[in-house]
Image (tube, rainbow, N blue to C red; front, side, top):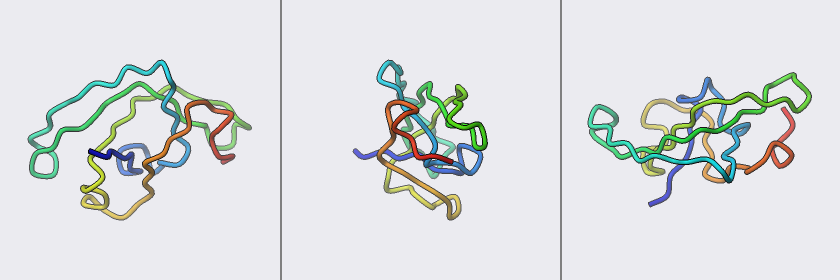
Amino acid sequence: MVYCVEGVDHGGQALLLILPDDSQPTRVERPDLLGGVTIIEAPGRRVSPGSFGGVETMALRLVPYYTWSHRGIGPMTVWMPRAARDAPVP
């Protein structure tokens, strides 16, 4: 199963999210979401726009790739950087 992060779950951002190597993902059953799906929640980080590379801690939600854009059109990514140095510059 391929999972992705969508902007709808992360304040409109998907490309500035970081999934660190030491993150401990958790599988969560969500019968209320998209007709019932298993998602992954994980501690992560986000490059703060306008902060010149600063990062903030946040909870990440990954949804099955096949559900992409079922809650509206927005940014999405499957591949996430593992460190701030590898993230795109906002």
